[in-house]
Length: 115
Image 1 (cartoon, rainbow, N blue to C red):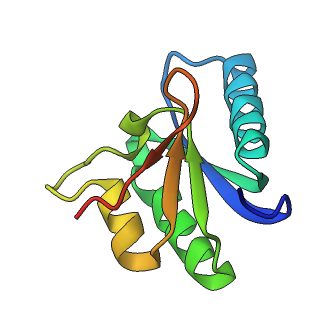
Image 2: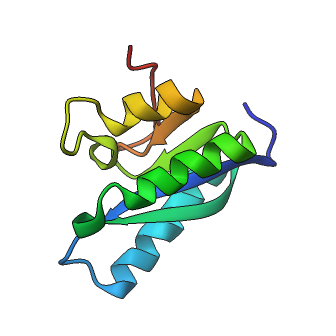
């Protein structure tokens, strides 16, 4: 178990079909998952598909600068590859050594070191 004040950030993809209410609900689910795993969710980075990977790039910089140990996602698919063969979870680990925590069904799935 982690210290309840251990910081984390969230990451999710905003799909065109998502309403504002659905986006708010997704962010609330990330905060709930973070709390269940012993983290305090500081910020959620929302990726719009037409600008991908801009939000993820900002997330990487923030995680490095603040030494944040975890990224919370709703599904592993949010960290899949876009444009090249390296997945976002692989890049996250390579550049920051942070780990990703994904809500699958229940309980949350911690994405292992992808190497």
